[in-house]
Image 1 (cartoon, rainbow, N blue to C red):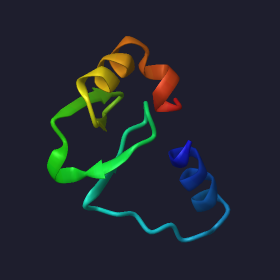
Image 2: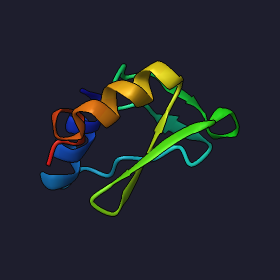
Image 3: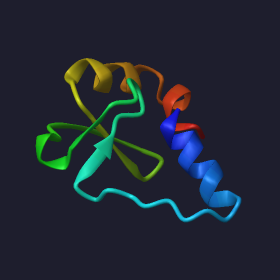
Length: 69
């Protein structure tokens, strides 16, 4: 949800500060430190990071549901 809000705000001209040291899990919506990123998947050339193996597995089973593509 946060990713969609950020995307919308950027489209309508708002400056949205990204936290390069933090990542966003598109499955559960959790923000977590980039240093803790153990799980990742690539979908259509984009890298997605996950807070847990469970979130990665959910994404891998249905990436279109979470990637917003």
